[in-house]
Image 1 (cartoon, rainbow, N blue to C red):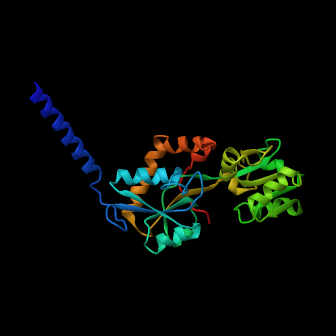
Image 2 (cartoon, rainbow, N blue to C red; image 1 turned 90 degrees about the horizontal axis):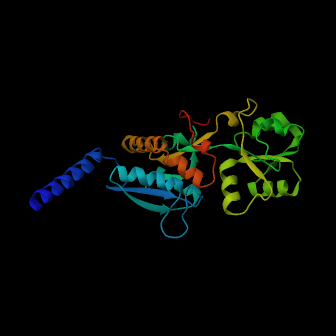
Image 3 (cartoon, rainbow, N blue to C red; image 1 turned 30 degrees about the vertical axis):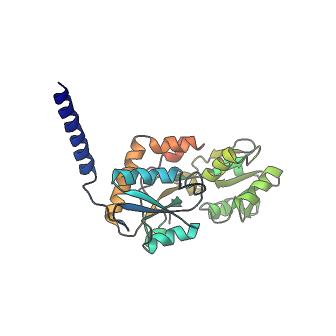
Length: 271
């Protein structure tokens, strides 16, 4: 009986090993064979570089993709701008840190399937969540966002532009503006972890035709080497699986985000 049990155990181990090998039969081209070099900068909760190694939502996404393709993750911690350049120059395979999928960016690097949204948030003391709430109010937003041009057309001199989210938050908390539009993800995370935006409610903006970013928010993705089809296919397949089994939504909710941030819809690029 012991001999039969031992034989059965060996057969199961062999079958598992064979299955594992089959899962990694498709070879993924990387800078170093058997490794996935991940360029990252500190942008919690998506990419956390403080302490030992790297962690965060984006890190978990690419780590799972690496494991599914028998690759060892090798971190490369850099400044934000240098992460993309590391991929362009061939020093890293992927770059993470909530990078938006844009047509301009896609000219230099490739972008994975969308991982989560980078939506517009409405920041107010009364919990407003509609663009209509801007009417008749002193409104603030930060320079460079997708919705700035449309808000300028809509609000004219009632809109005040700020150089940074910090400057905007200070005026909103002090009552120098009534309501604001800012990045939902960063605001929600700062409010949860750093005790920021005191007395302010942060809501996802409901769709409004006057602000297209409220209808089709930017999608984030993983940056990878331009034209590396094997790596792109591996990332896309893994991300699809992580959406289907709810892994990405669970991580977003754990970080304090509305689960709608994980509802990416069809892939698209920001122009």
